[in-house]
Amino acid sequence: ANDRIAEAVARHPGHFGGFAALPMQDPDAASQELIRCVKDLGSVAVAVAGHSAGRNLDHPDLYPFYAKAEELGVPVCVHVGSGRPAAAAERFDNPYFVHATTHAFEQMIGVMCIVGGGILERYPKLKVAFLEAGAGWVPYWMERLDEHYEYMAPAVPLMKKPPSEYMKSAQVYYSFEPDERTLNFVMDYIGEDRLVFASDYNHGDSK
Image (cartoon, rainbow, N blue to C red; front, side, top):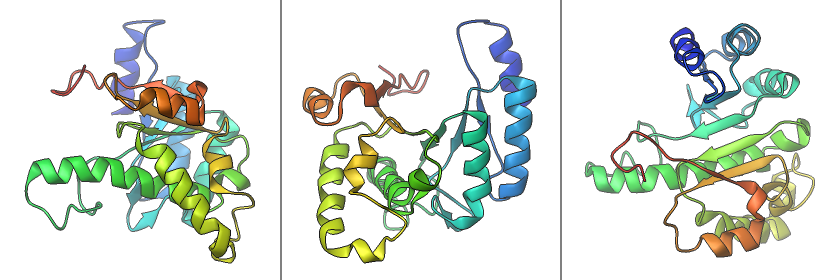
């Protein structure tokens, strides 16, 4: 798959950059494939799910992978589909319920793991993007995580400062949809430099 992505990118030089797709169920193999993708294929980022093989994004097994991504200077981009297991996916059969819930809630879980699990603290040059769940949830989640940090900080010893400080930092990005009515508020709250645009072309909901 990564070879085909590189071939497609090469046909349009200067227009696209390839994301590496990695076997995250095997973190060592994922690290090796990341090296190959960046150095041999020119990949500019890596895409991961919110969990893999029972591991959340803060699992220690993933530390070598994050270290390699930081070393290579490629952002880790979290994109959560509606596959299982995923938030609410086991509770609903209706695709409307599943799709609407999993993307946003899994991103909220993902950023909580990355921040609360100390990944950004351990790898201060690592960049992480949370994609295709809109951005309206970000201010709410910052406030909620900060509130819990006020009286539950001992439960997250790997996090050295309030969650919002990490979530507003230059290490983290969020994608937005073009018609989000709360976008101006989100930009004022977290800063416009924290936002990227996801067209989702050529899916049916692409705008």
